Image (cartoon, rainbow over all chains, first blue to last red; front, side, top):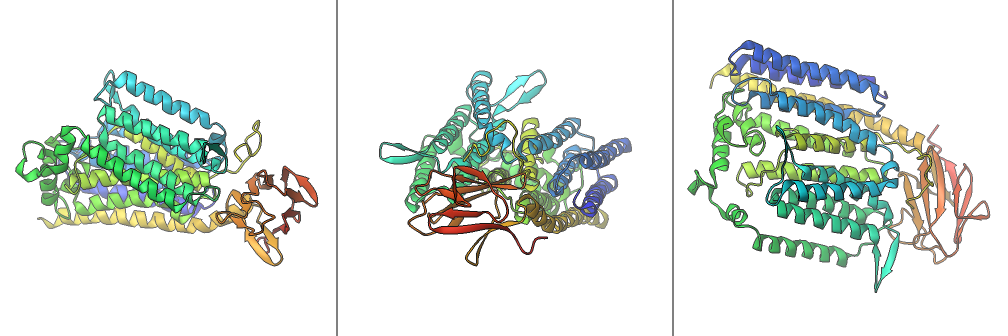
Amino acid sequence: MSNPFSYLFSCIFVIAAHAVMLFNVFSSGSYESSSDAFILAAAVIGLDIAYSFVMLFFRQHTFTVNFMLLLIINMSNIFQSCFGGVSLDVKHYVTGIAALVSCQIGFLLCRSHKRIQNEKKIVYICMILVMIAIVTLTGSRSMWVNIGNFSIQPSEFLKPLLVLACATSITEQQNKVRVWKFYIVRENVILFIMTAAICLLQWWCRDLGSIPTFAAIYAAGFLLRICYPKAKFSKKTLIAAAIAVFVIACVGVYFAPDYVKARLFTDIWSDTSGGGYQQSRALIAIAEGGWFGKGPGKGFLCDIFAHENDIVFASISEEWGLLTALMTVLALLIMISAPLFDPPRSYYHGTLAAGVCAAFTVQMALNIFGSCNLIPFTGVTIPFISAGGSSMVTSGLMTGMLTAAQSPEFHRIPGKKRGANV
Amino acid sequence: MELTPLLLCAATAAAIDICSLVLILCAYRERSTGKKRWNKISSGMELVEQGHTHRLLCDEILIGRHASADIRLPEMSVSRYHALLTVADGVWTITDLGSKSGVFVNGVQIKRKKLRENDVISIGSRRLTLRKRRDVK
């Protein structure tokens, strides 16, 4: 470990932050029996200590992202366990642990600057398999696969795969082939086709809220191609791309389903029991919560559908106050801005970090601004804060990519021709 | 609103804020160790050309005539995308990207070669020497 003092201080302050939150729950929370609050406290502090101990077995250069993730996941556990009365939300707790595990899996998979680049076909095969699963298992106008009591949203798994596809294809920019009068990069064409296919699939499933997230990941990868030295994008290409995006957005709005058009132009205050039901309740809850909230478990928003994911920002604002809700968002922003402190040393890791930042930022913006009626309601989750197993696991994987960018490995991959990507 | 719940909520927000601040400070503290790590990975090497120094700050460095190259050599004898320097296990390797005039290391034409300290790379009419940075021990 490069810096044991940083590790120790991170552990102590993360546990201290959770302890203060739990003290708030004990003192002013709404619970039937104090054992509920004790179970929650034991689960949260226990997870903090266990995670801090387990992380000692991983060789990483820095643990900042990991401790930010721990801070956010256990904050989320406390928030989710307090909605409508204090009681440990076991399902969310388990998905939180799954997110922590998937973060380490993502880190181990992506830390080498060559491993996945040399096996990039697997990334595309996985994307195709997930798309086939969506077409065959979810059925049109649905995005869920139900297995017993569990529901999985397969499209969520396309997010980390698209980030990986963007990152692994970036080193191919100088390998151009002539097609008719144009020199094109085969990888860029494949990536564009895959992104377009994903967006069309999301349209087919009526999960339109996810399209901006996929578009943002692709845009981050596209912009980094301009920065990549072996790329050669002209200003004309950029202007053409911007015009194409604008035209596609206009066509998308024109052909959008009626319920989407209704959301775009609805006045929530004139339709508080119909289309504006959730948003109007969310805004009332934020206003009632004020800066410092009503107290854990004392909100009314828990009776509203999707209070734990789609309008979770409003739920937190109501019970814990707008200040705490904003601090939670700030913690997420700090976590994704980790690459600013120690910039990645390879284009592969840089693209991974940019893709993850783009995806998380867009998701947060869609959820929070949607809750506040600044943009149409989309139903996109805030990473780690909203409830949802698929979202937690894939967000964990993507955070693992951020960690990999912070603690990269520059080793040769045995059995592969060196520099196979050049 | 009662004072105690208000103070508790304020304390919660403050605790999250302070914890985030401490984590930022830890990240900033580890930044310097990040630079040291990179020096170790890259063996603290740099390319020197007649008193001009090119620092090697990334795992892939493109050498060429094109304006977007990491190390730009604006000579007609140099191809736009001439050669690529890559690092793995602390060893720098140079690869000829199919240039017209070729890449020479210590006078011998190569397609791909591991580099050692003080190797002289000839690209077109330019001569670059790989050497250890003086500020790296």
